[in-house]
Image (tube, rainbow, N blue to C red; front, side, top):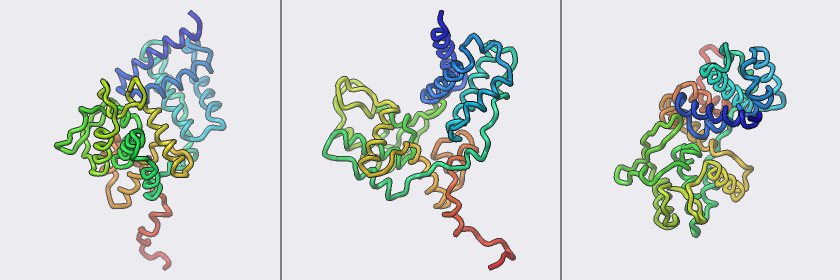
Length: 298
């Protein structure tokens, strides 16, 4: 068996472990596997895993981080730690090496992701053509991202049975395959109804969002990103990711007085740490709201 075949077998086992032992979403599993594949190629393939030492792991991460932004480096840190835990748990390494993966320097992560302004969101939504089935679908997708802060994969994975019209709720399956029921805001509900009643083709798929050409298949997370990309082009904006909607929603909630736990509940974060890192707001925007320190110069 060649090195490529050995890597494919090892990565398939790693993906199964991430799904069954860690309960990660399919999108996260693919991301972790992609990073692990890069690591395996860099160290010489699966055969080299058993001889790895802490110094080699650290050296790889330091070299990999050169000329990469903080978020890209952080993705590798998270993925590599998971792979090394898997390698130790399955007996491929004699000692645990996850601790040898250095953390990304905090200064590299100081640039926070930007949200979208209310005006930009309206431009993105307004650019969808309600006169076409594709426009109705894209408008419904973007409405769910903007009004509920869904992840792209969550919007792609919605099923018809997930919508409870009578209760005004939808069931969303997020990270860790956890299903949670969320209230369906009227604007998003109206967009969904318009798509399902006047745009969605009749087909055997139970997915809410499907392709517009036969065979009608469920949209993938990549297709949702493409919907966002086209919307940015129509709105005259540089291409932005779907997570911008989540950050915009979190920022608006914080500015309206919501607490971090409340924001985390809406975004379905597992820990408060995730919320505090994701939902920080621009200090310049908050500075006028801060009270002066007692005794400070006027």
